[in-house]
Image (cartoon, rainbow, N blue to C red; front, side):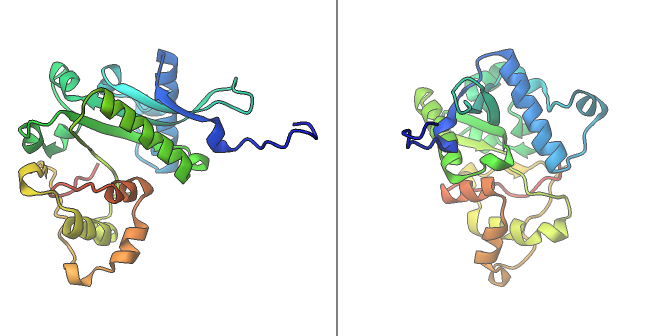
Length: 234
């Protein structure tokens, strides 16, 4: 920047959101997912995952990968700093299943008649978890939804940890205040069902509990999302 150049490039200016364009960009998204899910959030990795340093499953080959790209100060040093995996109903039907169906009975959604889109494997590097960046990510999803005439979005989102007693306030809040209407309500598979109705509604400190939710779930709730019946320990 010269003395006469008064412009200041912000992080937001460098960020673009688009679909991954190459196998190399999908690999970069998988490495990013590993960094967030396993290194930051301490998920337990199997031997292959640990050896490769990548979060990979069968769905990666058939889904669209939305990526958040930092173009660098000069626009020539692209780095993938966020990602979302998108699976449309027509693609899932050919593949054989949605990811969510391994944890929840989603027959109510499948029978709804809506054009479905499953969202999953969402993560953003910590320095980029800002409102402007997340807004760009949602704008990217909105464009995709419009292009494919999506009528309903769903997917799995995680609370951090597996201790049900510690997570009881968050689970109970979501159950009491954001449970999906019966005609669209997924239910955790019986073999994996964890009751989320733990604390009575009148004993929940709504403001405090909402503030403690992960940013992704908080964002979903602000957008009017609802949840299924029961939780699953992953």
